[in-house]
Amino acid sequence: KPLAVLTNSSFVSLPSVRRALGRVDFVLASLDSVRRESFLKVNRPHPGIRLSEIIEGLRLLRKKMQGKLLLEVLIVKGVNDTQEDIKALKRVLSYINPHKVQLNTVVRPPAEKDVEPVSFSFLKKAMNIFKKFPESFWIANTMELFERWAWYGIFIILPIYLTGSKDDGALGFSQEEKSYMMAPVSALLYILP
Image 1: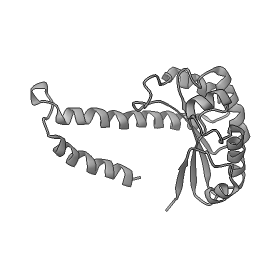
Image 2: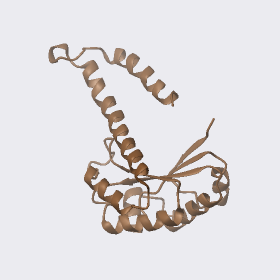
Image 3: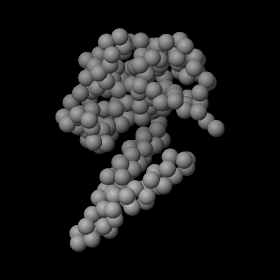
């Protein structure tokens, strides 16, 4: 079975971490910004974490690893969505040379009330800057984005429909009954490919 590791990339600069990650099938690493100012706003890292070390660590990991390096970039409106951010990201992605890059924006309700997603049109514009990648790459990422919206949409709306009043057109189940229905579905979605 393939082995995947999700990481926020904080310790990828350590040779021991890279050696361990280099043996897995997939490393899904976050790199939300390559400009220090934006990086600090989006990630709020520990003071000992250095962006330059993360970037170099990701490059070295990609160079030596047996599996595939997939980078996930979260773009937040007004934080890391400037032209300067996107162009700098393109340069660094060319330097790291990951197998795949996934552009995301905020889709779940964020922990911070002022955090907002970028628009779909912005993501399309960002894609144009990354013209290096083939069309199939962008189609797959767009499909992934819609899949995420569908996933979170159904798990936000379905509980309301299941437990809402019958007078309002909902099904009127109790919270406990709702849990019995939704838990197996969630489990199956995580188990099935």
